[in-house]
Length: 339
Image (cartoon, rainbow, N blue to C red; front, side, top):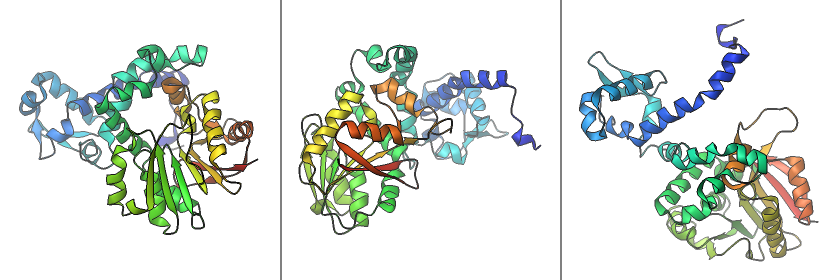
């Protein structure tokens, strides 16, 4: 048996799981202090970084030395630290928005919500609501900077999905594609870039779609997209040939999901298709997607589902699941039609 395949004893593995937050806080502090940005132009010592970071030199040196254990930095004989390729990804302008994601997922909002995790298990209600006294999306509307960072986090987490969806599903015969809850239009832009025939309708809350025109213009599809501001719990634009909901259904409670799906059903034509882009959990004991389902429960009372659970949910809304289309990303496309 190779050394890599030897697992620690069960009690050691459990302790490793329980202390995972140690590493989370280390990476969060590195992002918060902008260490990668500070080292972007070359190696520096803790003494040199003490002023720019507002830290005492000795504990900063110990902290950065600890980061070498996890492959973010290297330490030279001159006591100067350098970025590794992994550390480079922590720069503010690095592709993938890793820094924004770390500050969102590892920040105080997340931390306080997870402190109430057991409340979610006991009640089925969002821990975030208990911690902050309001739903996460209501709080984000009050904090525009955090909302912008949250949007960058969603691009980081789901960034591989739009091109994968465009590759996996044939949109060529469709006339109008309605992206429900499409935010900046990233998903719609990828599809329309790949398929020259369809036109698009981008639908989301008015304050969410403000940055969409710039993105659609950059992608060269602005003249093919109509932007509608509205509330998915009240209505959805009618007449689309396909309705895409990308990571929308997993955000909400069962009753809220049924309201959203009912509004989509009212807007659909007899030949329309409903396309849910979501993580589809594996059945039984098959592992997959880590703690994703618990994240949804903690933050907004939503959930990830198996294919059978999606089929049952859609049936309750008067829709029939026709197939699940895998993509090259972690997400799948749950296709449905009017029942």
